[in-house]
Image (cartoon, rainbow, N blue to C red; front, side, top):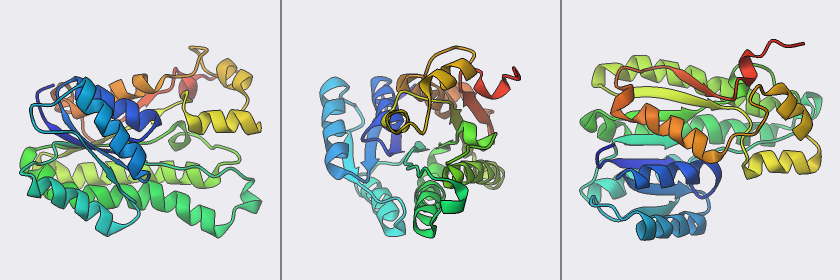
Length: 254
């Protein structure tokens, strides 16, 4: 990858952090955006130490993607610095676990707002820059975009919606040279998955038995797929969902 500018949301930890680190290692200048501004700035400091960029310093910013003005401020800061995003990775996400009949409206709205409205806010805010750079958007879908996830109704609904957004933006924005794609991870060794294992909401034995590769993914493996979709190697890939799930969603074993 040549030197470009990327904005990664939810980049204070997990898949987002791994993605920020991979882009930086490949010469991109990274805006690390996270609801936890302290974590975002710490990650940017790490990137500046490990992978200094010729395009300017990596920046860490506290961003609530559900707030349209926060997204606009990220875009404005890049413009003021004379920089423009060549890629946006919408990685911010949360989960709520409960039976569907107990799903409360507040947590339902929060999950959908973070995943869907957040991705829309960031995409809209950076659209003018992406139009200029001929850039791309990579959204984070899920195995929950393919099949049902019992006990995670809001999350599965949101991730299904991510694919509707991805396909529609790909069609609308393709005329501007903007590609919009999604990565659909399986179960990854992140805090989100570990929290499910700790509470018993997820069974590691069942997950591994259901996954043909018999292991969890590492965040860096998801990051590699994201980086591919944002790269020139995927220059004619638009509106696609790249599954990175170890074969989980194609396994028809009963």
